[in-house]
Amino acid sequence: MNKTVYCGMACDILNHGHINVLRKASEYGQVTVGLFVDSILNGYERIPINTYDTRKQVLESVSYVSNIIEQQSLDFTENLRKLKPNYVVHGDNWKNNEYSHIREKIIDVLKEWDGELVEVPYTKDISTSAIIEKIVNEDKLRNNYILKSKKLRQLLFSDKLEFIMEAHNGMSAKIVEEAGFKGIWASGLCLSGSLGLRDNNEASWSQVVDVLEYMANVVDIPILVDGDSGFGNFNNARIFCSNLEKRGIAGVVFEDKLFPKTNSFIEVEGGQKLADMNEFCGKIRACKEHQVNPYFVVVARLEAFIAGYGIEEAMKRALAYHAAGADAILVHSKISTSADVDEFMKRWDNRCPIVIVPTKYYSTPTDHFKELGISTVIWANHNFRSCIDVMRKTSKQIFEDQSLANVEKNIATVKDIFNYTKEAELKKDESKYVNYDVSEYIVPLKEKVEQEQNNVENEK
Image (cartoon, rainbow, N blue to C red; front, side, top):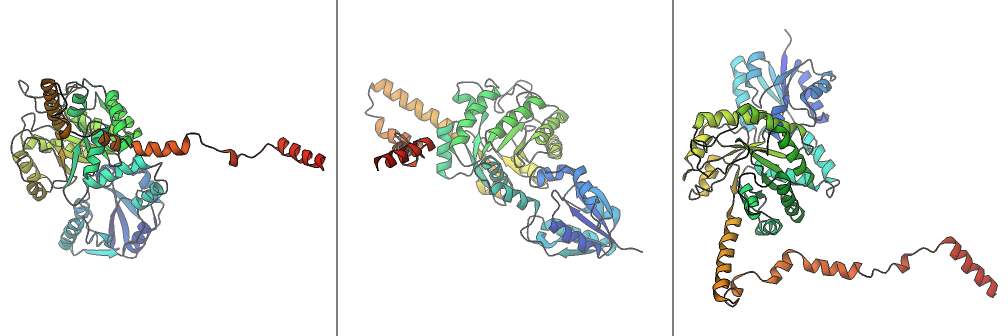
């Protein structure tokens, strides 16, 4: 009886690392490849460069492969129990990375029929991600927009708790970056509020994009945008995403509520209404399938707890949104403790990163979020709120005193503004480019050179 071998892999861009594994696998028997479906890759590192059908066609041309089947999750268990292969062959790079728990589970499952895990030495410096990174890094200036999305994705998939801070214009974005934050949250509440508008989609998506462009142009850290409910249906949402990508925005969060949206902390008689789950899944899928930047991030914001639903509705929607292609799930809550988030994380199996916004449960110790396994915390509106407080006090005091004497020492200097807007850099450039003398670089016209030579000859 022929021995059977199982290899689970993505093979987004087939390279000699894949070939090494498949060659070794073929030495043990007939090879079946469990090829990851597209939805796995969406939440794995980035959207796939090639679709499942394209990847399958490429693998079918490899002589070491006898059969190809779909693998629906990073967990091999379902396919392994169905096929009961004698061997599973895999690279040894997963021994000490974030997928080591999958490795341990495979070893346990194989024991059920005396199967064996064979690990091939990892082929260093070659992978689909490494190939893409090499292409991007060779032209960092042109690909800076892509790199910002990659930075955001790295934050979300980091093995430690990360934090991003709210900003609402170019100056506040600069301040957030200067403070040391690795990313910026462009809050819908704060962007609208800075324009004097309500957080009810009174600001159009094009007005929002205009502000974001100023922010993206003055910082090197990634910006994650509050995209509300997508400004309409799937088509409006993907047009919005396309415009974000063009302006170097790293990612977007869409909430599963109706358009126009209502701020999550505003009480509505009868409760806030959620979007149809399948309609929202289609919105996510449309944005993921039409993105150009492979690292652009789409986060699904879960509003089930906000709308008064319990854990079952929240979990059902989270699983659906991840399956639709969401890179991460933002679990939102309006109660004063982390109880909603705690309950969710007890049930969640870490299939994608979880983001939270602890505006209402701010007294919860940050270490508790680390213990829960939260990926990223958003400090959602505190710069804008602090601006309001300081401006209100400053305006009131100047109005009452009819003098600047009591406020000047308590506010930023004009020089501070100049430092943030890099006035010194402009001065330096003016000295170089104003009255730029190129006379020594000018190559004379051929006719003029000949005329000068003739004049010299005549003088002789």
